[in-house]
Length: 570
Image (tube, rainbow, N blue to C red):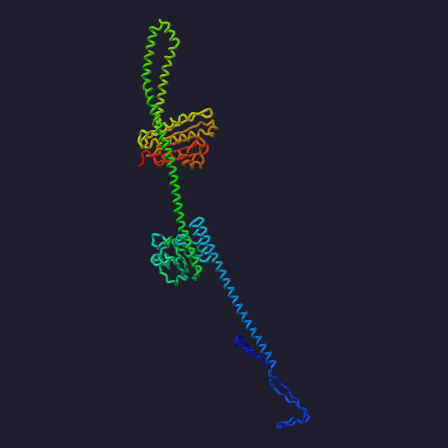
């Protein structure tokens, strides 16, 4: 029976049955003559055998066979459908797995790109960004080496170095190894500058120039995927992904992924440059603002010192005239008084005893006491005027408005003049003793300097030393004498050192680190501006090309050391 599906014979159903043997029993006379064809007439029984008889197929049997064939056909159709469905299911499962893997890889790639963009926005730390990129790309693409290669701008793209790399431990590292490829600039630089990506599945069959192939073989590279890193229109470097153990057929998704990564690195470079420029501008603005504030404070302080110097010079001049007149006439007054006293003595000797009225007047005025005391008064007046003259001289030495900008002076006079002006602050009170001044002056030559500015430095340092010896903590220790030590010495052939030290409360290291900063002060509000030491430092270091150093420990006092040239340095 044919098996037919969709009008096409796909097979046959064959049914077989065996032939059968039958026997016929006859009754009658059996004649051996074979020519007898009529029915036997005798009643003798004999047996006739029939062998290999065929039974014809009946109509019902044929119908049953056709039904069986139809069922076989249906079964075969269903089996084919099942096999085809099973095959489709297998293919679909493989496709789903492949698509799932692709989606996972794409998700991983997008996550990595998101991390790169996030890091760029957060810090723009190029080193951190490059380290993250190379590590993640090698993990996602399962490559043996991922590196960022930087071209030397002066080499015409022939020299460079890997600035970031992540490589499998079994392969040689390329980091910091100088790479020279004398044919890259001519053969390949323009290709990459146009933004193209090179994907080589097998470098041995890629038809590369020998010089370029040798460089790749140096690092055991078998398959290479390289994307350009552009900075504007300039080829800054290359983003390199390598397989080193075998050739590898790069997928389109992997190529596109590397292209996107290199583009993000290019953006990071540009943003890092913008940030660097912004930070540089901000730093310059901050420096300019600080310099402006310092300049303003210096101008204000200089104006104050100039005004003070003019005031001091004016007062000294105004005092000097009358005091000079008094001091100059004291010698004549003393001479006149001596002459008058001599005349009185002579007159008393000759005529005083005869006149009772004169005698009584001499007794009332106590001429002997007046004579003795008048000499002392004149001597005191002379000492007082001399003291005033010394103070005036100190004021003039301190201001030095009548001298040139740079002049050779005796710095000891400057120190002594400053001490003279601060003399009233050296005296103690009921709670504290006087501040002792210990001088250890060396024999120094005249020093070329800005005298008035150097005196200003002496004034600031000595005033701070007096403040340190006059605070509350210093008052609590009455047993220790308050001492300021001044010393000078020639430390080098053309340099001198001036040391101003006190035995006050001292300073911590944190305070010492800030004392020369503008507007920094440890004094109470209203007691200091925070500019004295800052201006002093600039006067010594910038105006005199010297050094001003501080050495102090809490409870051990403070020492300021000044070193300046003897002869001004041009």
